[in-house]
Length: 471
Image (cartoon, rainbow, N blue to C red; front, side, top):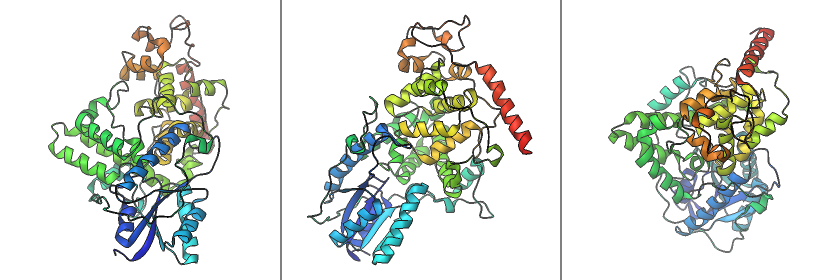
């Protein structure tokens, strides 16, 4: 198909890379000249689903992408505003006959694609979308009767048995035409956002590949033993790279599968591969059941009574609940845009089961802070912790923050890193509420609730709701 179109646009979205990019590969195959474009959203100030950490990472990823495109005779064209009208205007200005893009897994992105397709059809433009964000599209992993899976384990068995697609090669040249107006690369000022956290990771395709190399060399063989220890460097740390498409899932899987073949400790690598399947399971849930962004996946738990957010919710968001593991997690999140996955579960279950606050409020707060904020995974994680989601923890399985600390941070190494006012406190004092009802440090608060009391209340709330609903 090379040269089929004189000029085509590749619309970058959450695929900010030139290596193994499905739509970009097909655009180069189909067109003599390719215009790489990115359309900035034009909201200003506070946003319900993102914040300074993620947008800062995005800014740096776009700056890196622009440099990478120059190595293959390309130039990033930046526009701002409504994506559909911006792309149509760019096509008119440049004489492009086609628009290529990778499909978005989220409902908002899908709605935008639908508008773009209709607008292109009315103007005689070719519009081609490609699956890129996961190894397998939601319609590829179904039950024998053709229905979506609602439980992870049978989904993963099917997923693991499917042939995985191979990566695409790096394009040789885009041959982007000159003379096309481009706006400036964005800074946080574009959205009128304040400063990000102090330790947000470096963005860009090279940085992402460096993180993947470190994971393959140092982390995945010990993944089974270290992934739940928040003080250890035991996780891959590529979640934000998959979120923004600095790495493709095909590249990640191919390299991890090669490691599995030669690894002396295959269990850890196998567990990591299953984590990739969890990512795709939650994206499939969002695709087939988009109402999960508004409602509980499990209809049994719709209409649960939640407490109104008050001072305890503010304390939770600021990392001053008096539960050290909770406060450490929140402070890590605010400073880095990341929270260790084990701690995410503890923090989320604490909000929903100890403070009785609606999981949707926690979901939103995480999305405002996370650099790797992935709508499907974040929703799936929050509904899992609340006991309301697909293949969720049963409502009566309520994690105890104190015993979780004893199990996963017994020496307080993680806690003391993120809660410096506790750096001189004996580790054993971090494993249980103060016995004498006095603060364990002069400038650290007492626990805002009693876990045992709130656990009993949660059990009563869920039991009563089930009885009243007749389920």
